[in-house]
Amino acid sequence: RSYYLFPFVGETFSFGKTLGGLAPSDTFPIPESFDSPNIGNASYPTKFNTGITDPEMCICDDKCVEDSTRCSDNWTQKCELDDYGCLGWQKEEDCDYFTCLIEEGEAQCINTCVDECNLGEKRCVGNILQECTEHIDECAYWTLKENCSENTTNPFCEIVEISPADAECSNSPQTVVDMIAESANSPQSTDTGQAHGVYIRADHNATITGFKFYITNLARTDVYFSIYEGTAKSGLYHRIFSDFISMDFDETNPFPPGYYGLEDISVNISKDNHYFFQIWNATGLQYYTRCRSFIWSPQIRESVTFGEAVGHGSTQFNEEPPEIRDLDDASGNCLYRMLIESHLR
Image: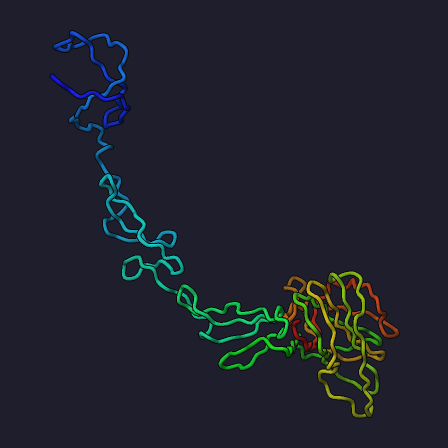
């Protein structure tokens, strides 16, 4: 007989693995047993017809029902036959910016986003100009259009119109009035010569153009307003601004309760520093404050355009407070009713 001979290549099949070829001489017919010589390095083309006797090898461990679908890791998956004829979950579609949900019994990529704004609108977030644009998920979101602070000719973000929202980078600053503890309505009386102030952490560079405290029982007196700067809430503070208003009025008819203070000023403050906005009067004032209810209540905090109001402090002075102060009253958990006018820079 003739046959084909090939260089040996190991192959794996259902019941084992080939190890090499064997061609003993003078062995026809092949005996029932013999001592095998060294295994040769040849392969003969051979076909085996075998039956699998291990029952576990002929039963599929199906993972699902054919053609059913499900969601997994934001993919749609379908139950299909694999290469061995067994049912398993196969990835179909990556929902990406959409959300995989079961709708009417079938896994589908559904757009669940919600528009934040109307396309084309513009607004100011601090000194950042944002525009409403369409995202890849087909919804509208506020996105950065320009950082006006980096614009050399128009360094301020200005609101042009409220509805529909419109804004632009401008050479005129956008002054904002922040109200602090506006809901405080119960008056408190200061002692003679007691200075009161609110700590504010600056998260942005800004210019203060005015600030006022809500006070009452004003008669003929001078009321001093100061701004101190420090690198942390507690520690050494330097006064960077001070001025006063003179309340010259008939003592029998005092000024009504309201916001009193300074405007048309220009005081630059710097990001990451802390500031103490203070009021002082030699004879004492009535002021309005809002404090946390209990010692375990959350600390009083209020956002302002350039940062956050983070507490209060009060100290007794016989005369106007000094230029340099060690403000260690960092545990104050009240805010005085006041307003601050500012714009980012």
